[in-house]
Structures are given as C-alpha cells and as structure tokens.
Amino acid sequence: MMKILVTGGAGYIGSHTLIEIINAGFEPVVYDNLSNSSPVAIERVEQIVGQNINFIKGDILDKELLRKVFAEHTFFAVIHFAGLKAVGESVSKPLKYYQNNVIGTINVLEVMKEFGVKNFIFSSSATVYGNPRSLPIYESFERSCTNPYGQSKLMIEYVLEDVCRAQVDFNAISLRYFNPIGADESGTIGEDPSDIPNNLMPYISQVAVGRLEKLSVFGDDYDTIDGTGVRDYIHVVDLAKGHLKALEYLANHKQTGFLPINLGTGHGTSVLQLVNAFIKTTGQKVPYVIAPRRVGDIASCYANADKAKTLLGWVAQYDIERMCIDTWRWQSNNPNGYN
Image 1 (spheres, rainbow, N blue to C red):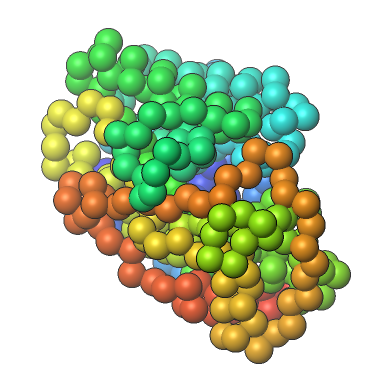
Image 2 (cartoon, rainbow, N blue to C red):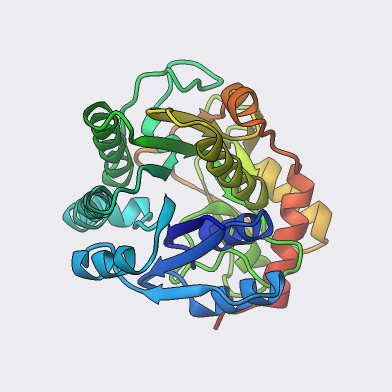
C-alpha cells in the first residue's frame, strides 16, 4: 500500500481528499498544524472511511519534525495543501504569507529530496492567472497575481518548475483550483473557516443558518450577466477526486516533470446566480446588500478543463444545485462548524 504524506490534511479540501485516496487504497499520513482546521475533521473522516488515520500535529516551518516524519515512513508522494489562504489578510500581512507558504513549501521539498521522495501534488489556484486576457482560461495563459496570497502560489509554481528542471526524476503536478464549494454527502465534514468567511459559499450558508446577519455582494457593475462577479464553482468532492486522479497518474507515469492542470467545471456562475440557486434549493432566506467592489477582484474567471480530462480522465460531475444542497446539509447539521 502506497503511503502519501498529506500536509494540511485536516483542512476543507484535504479532509475530503483523504476519503477519496483511502477508498482507492492509498494510506495517508496527515501533517497539519491545525491553524485553520480542526482535529474533529479527521475524526469524522475516520468515521466515514471506517478506519484510523495517522495524524501528526506539525508545522511545515518545522523542518526537524518533517525530517522525523520522513524518517519514520516511506512515502510515494506528497499532496501539499498546507498554506495560508485569506486574500485580505495576505495584503495586510505579506511577510507571514511568503514565510509560511513559500518557505514552508521549500522545507517540504528539501526534506523530500533528502529522503528520495520524487512525486509532489501541489494545491495551486486560479489566482495565478490574475486578470485573464480571455475566457475560458487555459493552462498555457501567462501568469500574474494581484495579491500576496496569489503571488505565494505563483512563486511556489516557479520553484517547482526549477526543481523539476534540476532533478530530472522529480515530478510535480500543480492543480490549479477554481472555486471549491459543497461538502461530503454525509453532512459531517465541510468548510469551517475559523474567522468570518472570506469565500462566498460559507458566507451564504452562515447567513442562512443565522450566524451572520446578511451577505455583502461586492460590486454589481461588472460586465457580466447580472453585474456581479462570475466564477467557476466546483464541488469539493469533484476536486478531491481530481487529487486522486493526479496520484494515480503519478503512479502510472515515471516521468512527468512539472504539469499544471486546471480543475474546474468550465462554466461560470455569478454571485447572484449562486445566491438564488441556494435559496431555491434549500428554501432558506439569504438577505444581501450590494457593496462596493473589492480591490483586486476581477469580473469573470472560469476554466478550460480539457487537460484534466485528457491526461487524468477527470471531469467534474456535480452541478450548482448539488453544491448548494450539500453545503446546506453540512451547515444545518453543524451550525457552529466543528465547534
């Protein structure tokens, strides 16, 4: 059984990915500092899959602990989710983001090299495309970023490209996610931001459950179908399956080098379309107000996901309605998240 180190495995996307890789026969070792996640997520995943998970509380900035973990286990690959991800906070605390995301990733890569681990799956983001010149977005588009969070993801991609050039037997798949929402159908794990949500869907669901008073829609004067921002929303379970497909690809291909792959549905949905879909599918009220645009936000962003289909055999399965239903099941079962 192949062992996989999953950094940040207690987080939103990490916890859902654990289910997919365990069910496919891989053995994860989770490494997470719990700064924006909960150990309860791991316990819930254990209930879903019916087995214990090896969990280590650790920080990617702690190189000695990383070495200890690599010395104790023989890993086939690392799936690297660990990272800070709040765009607004990154603008006010850039050094924190570069230190944690970039230096932390370099630590993981250096320890991988010491222990001869050659396969890396990186949790990248559509933010690396900045404001795209056209839509849909292809992997070949030029990259640029409008905030330190995005810059940290882009810097890591540059590092991975250089490492793949220098170590010809090193393989890195960079999965560029679009906008993950939804939750496992059990309703026991989901997105649980530790502070006021930065992302749209947890904000909607927390308004619906009564934790927040109303939703602010940032900008209604974009050049889009209804003036609100358009994004490519993808069900987190589809996203998790994308990581499994990437893992299987690395297991079946000796040499891949640096491989960037978009994970999205290829369809754009506006903020108000998502709000209305949530209201319609759940029957909940979601009061909202129109607020000024946020600095750095772009009008529209959605993927071309042909490369994922061709190389990985992956296609997103779930529609917006299913994303809303699964989100609400999680939020209504857990009005205060994991607390």
